[in-house]
Image (cartoon, rainbow, N blue to C red):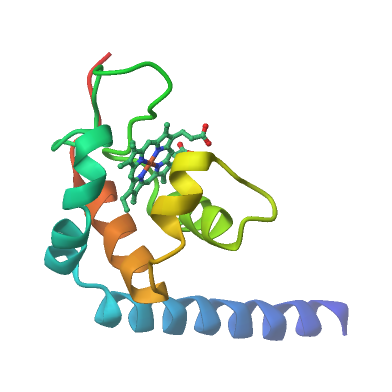
Length: 112
Ligand code: HEC
């Protein structure tokens, strides 16, 4: 009985994960993300990394879901606040966050 329950719930979770990925893949627009990210490049660099000033994290090649989580956290302003990034993230829409995160995650990560 337990095994059956496990099999069914695993199948449901897998289906949900697939649907979620499909829905996201369709709605994400990397070129719109690149456009929206132009203002971000002043600090984070055109390639998603910079050594221009201390304290600015690299975004290139970062995990997409992590970038979505970080930007959403700045937008909502409860779990993460930063004078600059809260101001940068507040005006972004859900779609902007998805597109920008997709854009930076596709850039090659910096070599250390
Ligand atoms: C004026 C400089 C500046 C601009 C412009 C800027 N950022 Fe940032 N960004 C920072 C700094 C500084 C931090 C580190 C903040 C902290 O300590 O929480 C940061 C942090 C982040 C993080 C968190 C990274 C991590 O590893 O947790 C993300 C994601 C991010 N910025 C995305 C963006 C996006 C997207 C834009 C454009 C909409 C943008 N930033 C514009 C300076 C900037």
